[in-house]
Length: 532
Picture 1 (tube, rainbow, N blue to C red):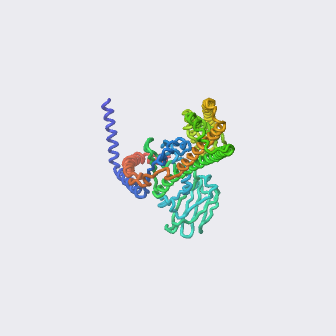
Picture 2 (spheres, helix red, strand yellow):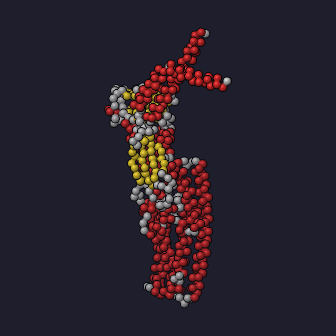
Picture 3 (cartoon, helix red, strand yellow):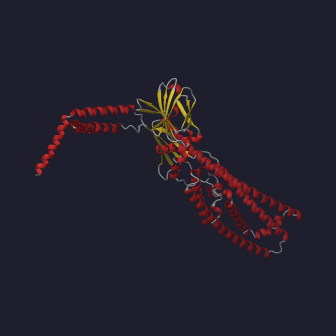
């Protein structure tokens, strides 16, 4: 029984082989047709090339110099001007974001896609910025129009225009003079000649896909690939597969330029707010310093003093170790007041914290860092969508971090007040021991200490202003172009090997088999229909 089954199977195989041999011409004809079609496809298909470029992120440490700047690194980093570590993954995502790419699409009017149609639409050539005719639409509707298709049949004396929406013809127009306005159901479109109009032989057929900026931006998001070498590297790769190499180079260059422009704008905004805050404080401190100077001058005039420093030398010697500590504590207390004023000011509600953590405890420094981090995320997200749930959540987190920061500052202030109080008690003890020093000298020391305090704060703010100004100067763009956009030699499409394998598979197997087994079935079906 088993041998009989095996024999039956072998006979079936022989029958299939004989059947194929009997219809050998099917295979020859099918294979010849498929190879010819493959050859024609390779000839008429516009090659898709890969255009790629490579950039690197610059760090701000290159702008640092001198011990003064190094000491203020933490302060300036709070302004967003420091040279801290960068997240290469976030920067790559930012470059390819909807907001950044939409600026590129809007600048080059990429919401209009021009293609020349030839050989009954079998050949379509990207025209981009070399189209003989250009369509434009008012900015008020360019963000809301759906995807529509204009078919332009350009002749020497007249141009026929057909407008399709949702595969239905919604308008036909005849234009003989340019520029001309097309009143369509979706709005007014202007059609005009370009500088390349006389280059083309007439007649010519052009298909123009018009859509809104958001829709076209999403298409380019899928086309443009932005990736990084590794997380510990600063190298970012940008590439784009396209039939129009010139267009791809221009787009990639503009993506880089847009990123640099946005980075420059953000940095300038932070610098301006920082300098405005410092200038405001400088004005207040300058007024206090003038009052202190005037008070000392009035004191000297009242008691006709000339060299009070020599008279109180003995007091300076005894309090030499006490005064610096007291001055430092009071200076820190003044800085804490600056922090509280800035955070509580409604104008700075969403501004990055402008003073570094080196004036406070490590715990407070950590809270400052978290506050700036949450605020930075909120500001970045606010640019994309000010009404999103994520922005509202970040707003709540900012308020929570602000309350935590104020509590921490309050604790630091209490500690500083205790320190100042203890130092003043020690000062009082010294004053009691040296009671023979005239009251005039004691009052002078009080005035002198106030003057030195205001001078210290004033000099500190001047240094911060200078450093913020230096860091705000853009000597170089953020992105350093390593490789200008260039074309990879080997085309992405068409792949000759894949086309050949496909032609052999369908021409040598699928189509002949379908013909051998399909024609008898069709004949039987037709015969039965006739018999009925």
